[in-house]
Length: 570
Image 1: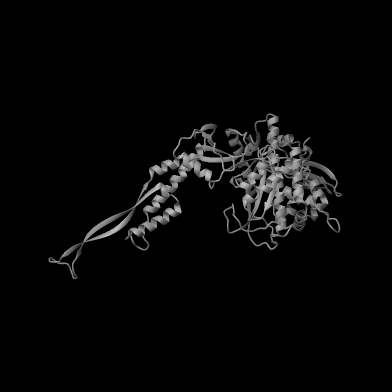
Image 2: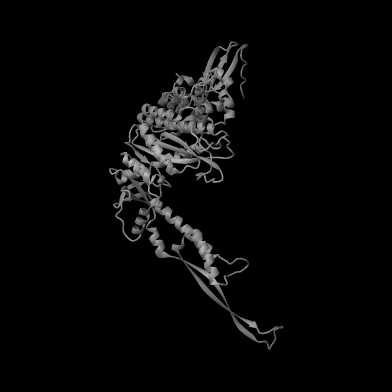
């Protein structure tokens, strides 16, 4: 039986506004000094001063991207439900906030010196959060767009927005346009430290030179290991890094002659592998452990850098299964080959060979299968002359030839190919890296790729509800700040848990324990927390109270040093 809520006294009204995780976001934005940096690098506006400063609008956009990810036309309604000071706004700003003002703020931000601002944010992040910078991992992805964009100036024009155009689409949508999103993270918590947005048709090989030089400027030297994928393995870029006493680590692509040379040697020789790592199988506790073995190719590459070959037992199994799947699929396809039309068998050997060549060319398994064309001779008796057959009818024997396809596995070729399963080569100019250490540093690269995955899934960068390329570029820059705050939040919670010797926090649903909290779990623990007030006729506060805060959320607030008064806690 429900209890009726007593009416409020005359002249008293209630107010309920959301606090949520906005104070947590505000805490990190202030530690990064981001509001002040916005004001410093934004160009001065001509004419009268704006009612809501651009720096405050950008702060609201950042909070929205982290907490709700509403399109611009939904920002005003979303912000109106929050306590304004936790979004960095004054109460009178809420009525002035709308999608047009957010769009003009993005235009204003595009005219800022964003390169210097990015450097300043990176330097502040490194200083305030004491990041270690011995290793930097770079990776690129594409942000896909649809529709037409009119403000696409000529490539030669300076101070232009990036061009939204077609290119090699990593979302597997070559029919759509794109931008190239280039990001570098540290090996200390995978914190994004650098971001650059390029034209959609920019090749990955073209971004490494400027990226590495920018990192040298941010870090203040070349004493760091630059890790990237196989696109880094380009002669001029590697020579630049080595010439400036920098260090790099990359995957050697299959197109290099050194790759084919080593595989040809492996097929006929035993390799003196040495075990460098043994890890639990991610597919289950009852699965065999993943073993990594290594071997250094003393011949090196033609530029004089080291080539380190690695063998993964997990990759070996995956390569074998992929090859046999392709072989079995091709075998069945060859066995089902029939001539065009209603024919059941090939009438000529030439037609059969032509059909086989077409299939083998598409499947690229020619060396692993033995295909022969067999002649099949069939005899039948045919009546001599016309008429109905009778006792005196003569018959003659007629032979007809057809050709069928016989397919067998090339056991010797499959055995030789299996000797190359599980192999992958790394290239570096760092002569002090050991085989085990090199593998560990390369294995951190997926954390950079994970940031891209979160950009597209958790933060939903696509679709971008903007038709102005300048605003698109500004918004994608803000997404870099969003992932920076996310990474710092996760890093600080886990680091503080370790210092406080806290093994887990009850952040999962049903208060289940979590050993490595993510930013999403932390923010969800405070989601929908509201502040309630009773106000008199003049708007004066008569009474204030808050929704209860869970034990896990209270522990997080304490670990991060968040002002507990924002949640009504003492």
